Image 1 (cartoon, one colour):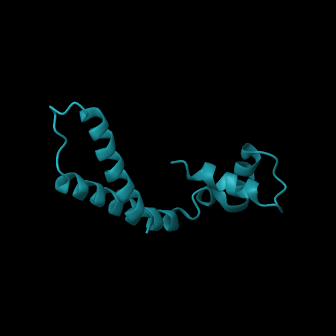
Image 2 (cartoon, one colour):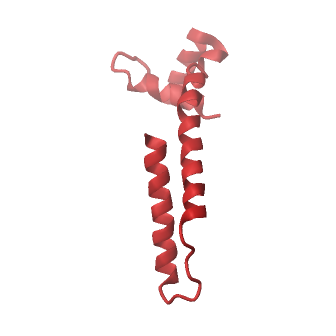
Length: 98
């Protein structure tokens, strides 16, 4: 959905580009490559990011199943939940980035 904006900002970052803003960037892409040009590169982006997200979700779920649960009666349960969540998220982030 946001790919046209991503494409427009990439064009803006090009030092050789003569477009002053996102609106003009979108117009130039459309005039040069048509409607499909606004989504150019989407397939490569999907092929790159989907495996990362799938891996991260799998690792986070795995950690949730295998970590000891937080004791609801513990006086430090709020801190324990936070640490638990941080460990799961960190592991998922590292796995997804690999």
